[in-house]
Image (cartoon, rainbow, N blue to C red; front, side, top):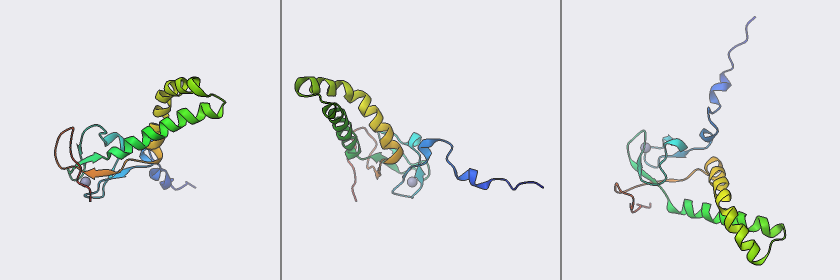
Length: 125
Ligand SMILES: [Zn+2]
Protein backbone atom coordinates (compact mmCIF):
# COMPACT_ATOMS: atom_id res chain seq x y z
CA UNK A 1 0.00 0.00 0.00
CA UNK A 2 1.67 3.17 -1.15
CA UNK A 3 0.73 6.71 -0.24
CA UNK A 4 -0.14 9.07 -3.06
CA UNK A 5 2.49 11.77 -3.53
CA UNK A 6 1.81 14.90 -1.51
CA UNK A 7 0.81 17.23 -4.33
CA UNK A 8 0.23 20.15 -2.00
CA UNK A 9 3.96 20.48 -1.43
CA UNK A 10 4.30 21.97 -4.88
CA UNK A 11 2.08 24.85 -3.87
CA UNK A 12 4.39 25.90 -1.08
CA UNK A 13 6.94 28.53 -1.98
CA UNK A 14 10.55 27.53 -2.26
CA UNK A 15 11.70 30.75 -0.61
CA UNK A 16 9.83 32.93 1.87
CA UNK A 17 9.97 35.96 -0.44
CA UNK A 18 7.96 34.05 -3.00
CA UNK A 19 4.91 34.01 -0.75
CA UNK A 20 4.04 37.57 -1.65
CA UNK A 21 4.82 38.94 -5.03
CA UNK A 22 4.16 41.93 -7.20
CA UNK A 23 2.42 41.65 -10.52
CA UNK A 24 3.20 43.29 -13.82
CA UNK A 25 0.53 45.96 -14.56
CA UNK A 26 0.87 45.22 -18.26
CA UNK A 27 0.47 41.44 -18.47
CA UNK A 28 -0.42 40.42 -14.91
CA UNK A 29 2.53 38.08 -14.54
CA UNK A 30 3.83 37.60 -11.01
CA UNK A 31 7.20 39.30 -10.67
CA UNK A 32 9.23 37.89 -7.80
CA UNK A 33 11.12 40.12 -5.40
CA UNK A 34 14.58 38.97 -6.63
CA UNK A 35 13.52 39.95 -10.16
CA UNK A 36 12.57 43.49 -9.16
CA UNK A 37 15.11 46.25 -9.53
CA UNK A 38 14.49 48.91 -6.90
CA UNK A 39 16.89 51.51 -8.20
CA UNK A 40 16.33 51.63 -11.91
CA UNK A 41 13.49 50.61 -14.22
CA UNK A 42 13.60 46.96 -15.20
CA UNK A 43 11.93 44.77 -17.79
CA UNK A 44 9.07 42.43 -16.97
CA UNK A 45 10.39 38.84 -17.27
CA UNK A 46 7.27 37.89 -19.23
CA UNK A 47 6.32 40.76 -21.56
CA UNK A 48 9.51 42.88 -21.40
CA UNK A 49 7.50 45.97 -20.47
CA UNK A 50 9.71 48.48 -18.65
CA UNK A 51 8.54 48.64 -15.04
CA UNK A 52 9.53 50.59 -11.96
CA UNK A 53 8.77 50.75 -8.26
CA UNK A 54 6.84 53.82 -7.14
CA UNK A 55 8.79 56.32 -5.04
CA UNK A 56 6.07 56.39 -2.37
CA UNK A 57 7.06 52.83 -1.50
CA UNK A 58 10.46 54.06 -0.29
CA UNK A 59 8.95 56.99 1.59
CA UNK A 60 6.48 54.68 3.30
CA UNK A 61 9.35 52.45 4.40
CA UNK A 62 11.41 55.42 5.57
CA UNK A 63 8.45 56.74 7.53
CA UNK A 64 7.85 53.37 9.15
CA UNK A 65 11.54 53.01 10.04
CA UNK A 66 11.74 56.51 11.58
CA UNK A 67 8.56 55.87 13.53
CA UNK A 68 9.82 52.56 14.92
CA UNK A 69 13.27 53.88 15.83
CA UNK A 70 11.78 56.88 17.66
CA UNK A 71 8.73 55.27 19.22
CA UNK A 72 10.60 52.23 20.59
CA UNK A 73 13.06 54.16 22.82
CA UNK A 74 10.35 56.72 23.67
CA UNK A 75 8.18 53.98 25.15
CA UNK A 76 11.22 52.74 27.08
CA UNK A 77 11.51 56.13 28.75
CA UNK A 78 14.08 57.93 26.54
CA UNK A 79 13.49 61.65 26.14
CA UNK A 80 15.10 64.75 24.64
CA UNK A 81 18.58 64.66 23.12
CA UNK A 82 19.18 61.09 24.31
CA UNK A 83 16.05 59.98 22.46
CA UNK A 84 17.17 61.82 19.35
CA UNK A 85 20.62 60.21 19.30
CA UNK A 86 19.36 56.72 20.02
CA UNK A 87 16.72 57.16 17.30
CA UNK A 88 19.44 58.07 14.76
CA UNK A 89 21.50 55.03 15.78
CA UNK A 90 18.47 52.76 15.61
CA UNK A 91 17.34 54.12 12.25
CA UNK A 92 19.79 51.91 10.33
CA UNK A 93 18.80 48.53 11.86
CA UNK A 94 15.18 49.68 11.97
CA UNK A 95 15.11 50.45 8.24
CA UNK A 96 16.74 47.09 7.56
CA UNK A 97 13.97 45.29 9.45
CA UNK A 98 11.23 47.47 7.98
CA UNK A 99 12.49 46.83 4.44
CA UNK A 100 12.54 43.07 5.05
CA UNK A 101 9.07 43.02 6.60
CA UNK A 102 7.83 45.36 3.89
CA UNK A 103 9.08 43.07 1.13
CA UNK A 104 7.48 40.02 2.71
CA UNK A 105 4.09 41.45 3.57
CA UNK A 106 3.71 44.54 1.40
CA UNK A 107 5.34 43.85 -1.94
CA UNK A 108 5.96 47.00 -3.98
CA UNK A 109 3.44 47.98 -6.62
CA UNK A 110 4.94 48.00 -10.06
CA UNK A 111 4.24 50.80 -12.49
CA UNK A 112 4.78 51.06 -16.19
CA UNK A 113 7.87 53.09 -16.81
CA UNK A 114 8.11 55.40 -19.82
CA UNK A 115 11.79 55.58 -20.53
CA UNK A 116 15.00 53.82 -19.74
CA UNK A 117 17.00 55.77 -17.21
CA UNK A 118 17.50 56.39 -13.50
CA UNK A 119 15.36 59.54 -13.47
CA UNK A 120 12.39 58.06 -15.24
CA UNK A 121 9.07 59.84 -15.02
CA UNK A 122 6.22 57.54 -14.15
CA UNK A 123 3.14 57.12 -16.25
CA UNK A 124 0.42 56.91 -13.65
CA UNK A 125 -2.90 55.53 -14.72
ZN1 LIG B 1 4.57 41.90 -18.00
